[in-house]
Image 1: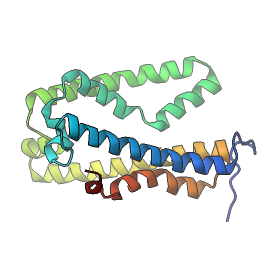
Image 2: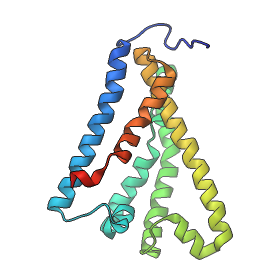
Image 3: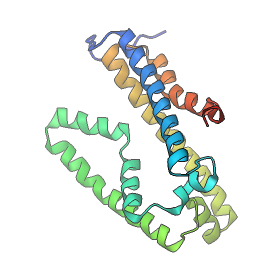
Length: 196
């Protein structure tokens, strides 16, 4: 097996701390989400087990929150790390140019999201809009494109985060790559009905 030396042998923390951080953050994330879901159901009478609440938040999200959701979905870990790397190599102007180049796409997608919400208020996803407007063939093509995009995007984010953990702690790359999404799997597999 080929050993990859990342960070020129410099480790900020030891491997045990790296493993503890990854596993601990997964458990902490799971607990926070489960408590939030329970409080939401108990005090706000919102049940995220219903598809209407899960998909579109009972249609109670305003246009401002829709626009901020578009921005937050563009702020992936790979882009943040890339901006930091460019800043380290070229100075402050690198991330400034990177951010100014992306702001047009973010603003455009925010406007598209708000217009889609105004014009099709009862649609749950963009796939529903595509199916109604362009038919079944376009719907199937769009499903395939969405799946490919999701696989590439999630894979890129997981690999970027695992490279960061490897660079900080010297943790094995395969272990970091498996343990980072394991927190989400733990949250999805955990029987939520027991907590209600």
